[in-house]
Amino acid sequence: MAQEAMLLRKHDRARVAVKSVVEMPGRDADRIVRSLKQANRSVSNKLRKEFPDLFEQGRRLFERSGQLVAAVREAFEGDEAHNGD
Image 1 (cartoon, rainbow, N blue to C red):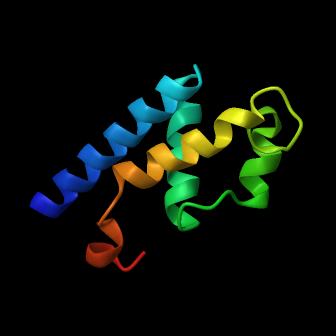
Image 2: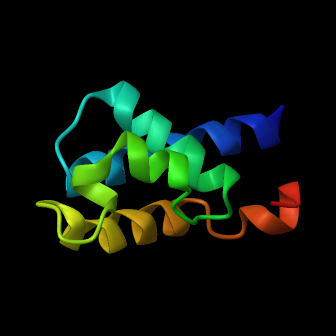
Image 3: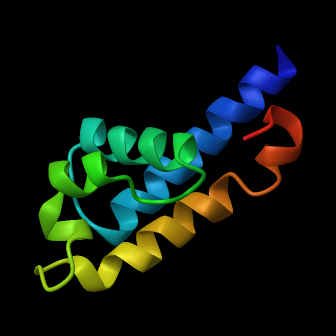
């Protein structure tokens, strides 16, 4: 149970970090966090298609994508050792 609580805190921290980089609805931030976590902090093609302004090179928010991915990585730092991600 303690591990679940820690995972939820990390997810919340990642969600706040995503929203601090780019203003967006919470459900979009959650979607990005989940996708990045599942893909070992890499942007999947599905995520790129879902949020093209953010993850496709040359689009208006692309310069923030690296900062966003780094924020999620930082929030889940050390998680791989516990969950095998």
